[in-house]
Length: 230
Image 1 (cartoon, rainbow, N blue to C red):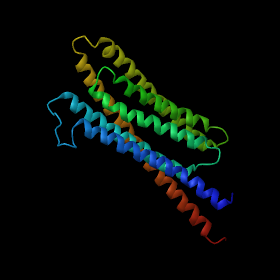
Image 2 (cartoon, rainbow, N blue to C red):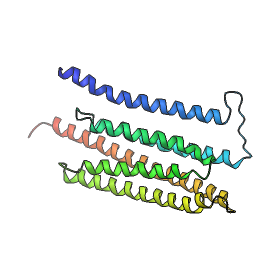
Image 3 (tube, one colour):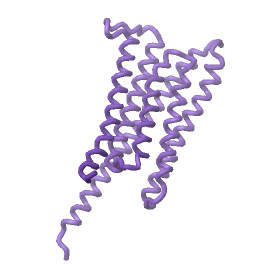
Image 4 (cartoon, helix red, strand yellow):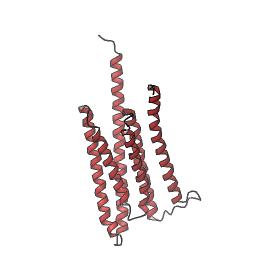
């Protein structure tokens, strides 16, 4: 295989991830439309708390998924796929988990099973922490410090989501017949959605700062290289 053919081959791999992402969005939006009967005429029962919880859970999850995609689009430029395939396979697994999370977002209307959604978020961040940890070898001290920060952030988020999962199991799932269980379910849906939006807004700001810094460093390096030697 020539170098040009190899490059074209490796460039097709992100296209597969993009297609996977597109199919995921089409699927969940179709499911949302079926739930609210958009195909036969908008008829969401806005007087039903479950409808509002689904809208909240779906919206916050959509924000999370978009943030994950933007992070992927940025990282694939810095760390393109190679013939080792480990990065590509990890992204397939990662977006498969994201798809499950998006599907589980609809469980906001079906307590007491919403803990699957919260737990899946913990699994996602555990996977991300493991992936960053696998990249620790053979990198500079600056990159290693950045990876450590990413690992700590993902492990902290995973711990919070696992804690919320346990709280949900103890207060809702195992006590569904008790009075106030629906109220506790609604409270935990709101808390989980708020945490999801807050952390991903922070993540987008951090990605923007890193991208601008990398761009500024690249411009400075180009200017230095173009400057005439004295």
